[in-house]
Length: 633
Image (cartoon, rainbow, N blue to C red; front, side):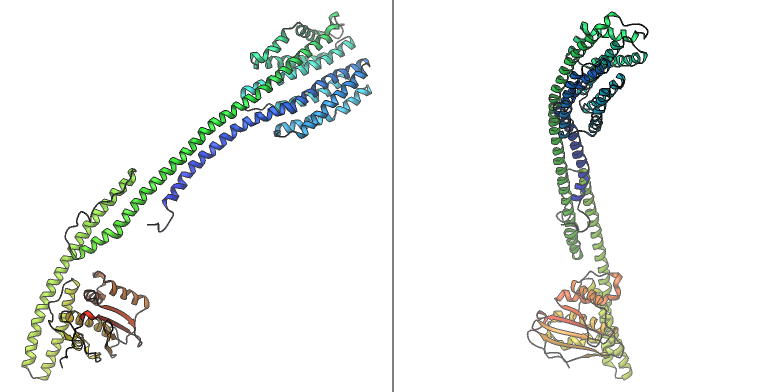
């Protein structure tokens, strides 16, 4: 049985289950995408390091060499050819870097911002060179100008090493700090060239050099502490070398050197010490960068493998959740559908049939009639509902049985009272008949006729109670009775019989067993016609034969009834509803419906051409006698 209103529970369960399922799927997609994004990011960094960071590192190396050559040119005025060659090498590395930068894809917003800063700094290289060629720039200012370009490249490296793997991030960050430490060594070499040229250490130079030394040593120590033993080994070799120890001694000597004190004899080896340390750090740095790049791909592959495994299990969990949810939904829907069908059968078939049977037979219900609902269920709540329906069924059956017995008792009371009245009225009619025969006084005879007519009506009302109780009146005929006599008998039981005109019927007769009920039925309809029409109007009773029997029409000239009420009355006449004490004003229609159903008679109320109603009674041929009978005159 499909649902008649509202949304089906299957849809509601689907909506209820879709919320956690969609949340689970969303979380799985988000987690898989986030983790896989980290692995793909590492693969992009590998590509960036090979095609983008390496050209940038070469730019830094060339800038470091150009910075030193530019300072030497400003100090000594020599080395112009060497500086020109170095500038050419720098321009070639810058051009290669800018070309790779324009073609590189997959750059993060942070890295793009730092790249724009670096490109802007590189665009100022021409102005720096012009100042050097003019010979008017201070060496410290030139060093600072080159420093700004190289610092921009290291800030770009910081944005590039933002990787999801923490161990790899610490390693890459440490390598970047070592690169900055190497860059500071290059700056110290330029300052050493200034000190050697002037033969003393000015306070401004000592302050700037001291800051460089402190920053380099801090970066160096922090970076080495974050590298593992294998990655730290080349740098440990550098720090253990004599050249590095001599360079640190040089750093300490310059920081302690006073301006008024000349340089020591060992100052002649300072440029060589700086060059040796820088070259050693350059080799170690290149090896560390290569090792870092080599670590990126395995780490990325490992992350993607983890994503694949975790994502696969997550996908299996999602699919299993979906299958279990839909299985639970289907099982619950089947259980509820079975409960609905069982309850529908109980409400629309079993209980109505039992109530219908109890109207005529009040014996206790059989086990088949009150069998409990059987619904295959594994849900406790549905089982409880089934049990509740079974309890409702037991209560309803007991109430119906009690009501049927009560109705039978009431009917029996009606029948007993009606039988007693019927007996007394029959005796009264016999008494009146004798009195009518014994007197010849017109006035007394008229009064006796009125009492006779009144008693006849009282007898019909008593018989109505018997009929409403599904019993048969005691009166009856063995032989057929002409239809004219039946019509006259019906009219004689109506109070205002003078207003009724019976038109000549066809030559037909009713079987004796149906005479009393048909006369009673027609009397009820004739009485209704007289009651619901003006007092001085006429009620016509016509009859004619039909292919299926005999039709009798009772037509009044009343006000009629609205179509809705007329349809309701015709439905009541056709369906023979159970007698309702609350509708006693329609008592005659209940009697007509019972008598019509008993003999298969069709009764219908139709609008009359005169404005009133026409009651059409179709008597089936089974109620008609085979041979016509002459009516009494």
